[in-house]
Length: 366
Image (cartoon, rainbow, N blue to C red; front, side, top):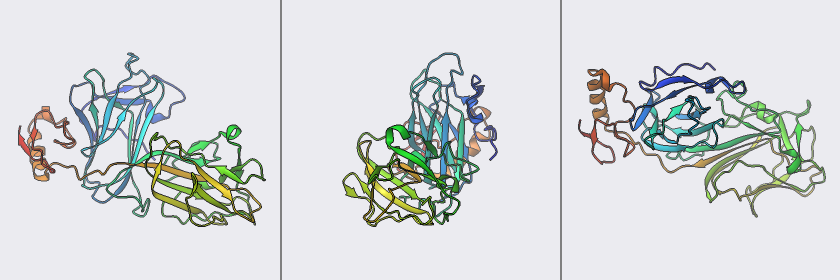
């Protein structure tokens, strides 16, 4: 995977270097900030295509690059839709946002929108990756999936590219002492043939977590849910047996209700379970309960947790108006820094255009 500069995708802003920290990954050591008072500044990616399933990740690390020790807040927009608010807890703590989405128009834009007059938006890295059509096949294609987190249970480190060719970030789980769980690594005599549509990388399936006591009858599955009130989520769980000829089986529960109807027997292949619309909050508890006759406690290898967003519409200004406006911009250098959708989202139109309030806005005056 090769990182490239952003000059071909954005026409505004200034570059800066974050104060050197040996712990930073390279993409976080530089950033682009947008000191002008424009409502939004956009990255444009033409020709992505309609109906394409993509993963988009935006990463932010302030690091006091401007010497002001003043954490800004601003909004993140995607193709005329509001994505999220960027808020920082500390100067030296990064924030990342990731979404899986099926495109509705040919071009993709990601914008940083000013929400406070004195707060300067910035961004360190932006990634757009095409996923396979069959990946996350159970998702509602009109609604974005906002990543809450992925676990590669028992992995000692983060797993990403090149282990995951789609560069999904899989967090390590190491909280063994307080959870009563232990890591379990696959023995040389067992196998884990991967034939699942979501294509989990082999690296997250080489280990699992299981209760520390072989006599344990159940285990609570660590999760990464952040919603304090119940909201719809898309979740995926992966189970792989680590031992050859193991007698292991268990049932899967969410709170007090059976989450999966059948008893899970994780033999030589990867066993995956998808919950396409599950109401979850921080108080939700997933648990695995040893089945009758099983001589070993439950285990789990990996999981993904997404919050399902509100429906994203086509959210695009009339295409004929957009094309005419693009031609007009070519004649005026001072207007070429504006990109992204000229009218949407509502309240973030370009400063020098007026738009109608139609579902597909038209540009009424300049």
